Length: 158
Image (cartoon, rainbow, N blue to C red):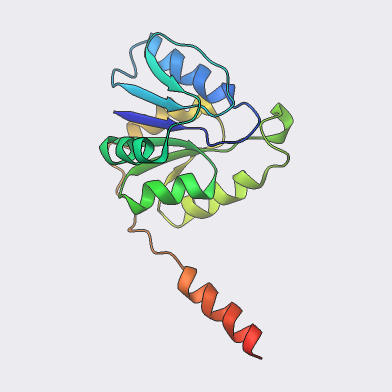
């Protein structure tokens, strides 16, 4: 099963779902596709699309999925990595009204360069990424949260 999550942004990310539908229509994607669409209005008879999914149900879908395709939200990416999922991430872009700026490009580039995910720039690259993900071996994700907390604590203590 492929889980697609578009986060909970108040802006649509229709480009990603249009490409997923195209790949289903031409037979590239034959897996079950479940979508957490947030505020993206999209209908499909081949994908199970939900606006928002209760956290327990979302966690179950994350556990059960074979692949996570997500927007460039840190929470979505890290959630997938913490569950040892292969992740393909695509940034929401301001020029399409998908976000207020393009910070997701940098987020995806950082995770991609670290070897954690397959980061792409545009939904048109999903097809190629689906081939790459078959042999992709992501690095084990290691958070630097504790290090950052120590730095902040040290600054406060000074």
